[in-house]
Amino acid sequence: MNRLLPFFGFLLLVALLGFGIWWNTQHDQREVPSPLINKPAPAFVLPTLDDADKTVSKVSMLGKPYLINVFASWCIACGEEHPVLMSEAPQLGVPLIGYNYKDAPDDAKAWLEKHGNPYSVIITDREGRTAIDFGVYGAPESFLVDGKGVIRYKRIGILTPEIIEKELKPAIAALAKEVQP
Image (tube, rainbow, N blue to C red; front, side):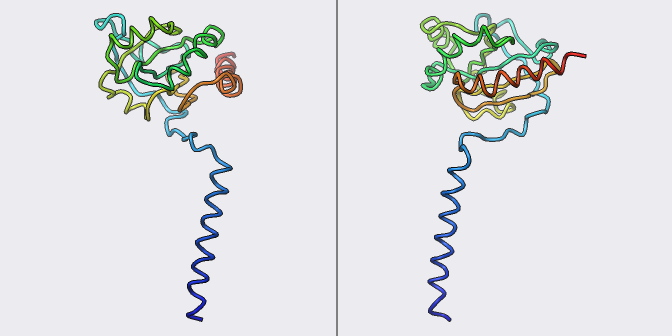
């Protein structure tokens, strides 16, 4: 029996490896469930990119849904996502709020000047402190917040036309249905 222990150990290792491979093929590793879904968005008061003396807060955004898009001039993936935002933002039916993350304001302004500005307003979080409250892993990320200030959808990574069509637009449509009597 003692001679069979290494063999059974090997079989167990192969089974665990096989399960891990199967699991990874069944689940998108970029999809990280957020504990904030269906919970109130964190309170925030952040300056706008255009005027550091002007602020936007969670309270000032209450009453209508909006989509927050976390971006930065240093973010390569944001450059891939940006043309999609430029073309899709007008059709979303909700304001697109730019959330400039850990970025120098002059760099962000130059980047937007070069690539275009799809945002209704841009808030800045240079130190990234508020981003921690939102559970931001990095840029790009997007959050759909309803009119009551509750996070209804979160996307880690690039918003593609397919994701906007299959995930984001249905989530926005669901918010519209919630508002109707």
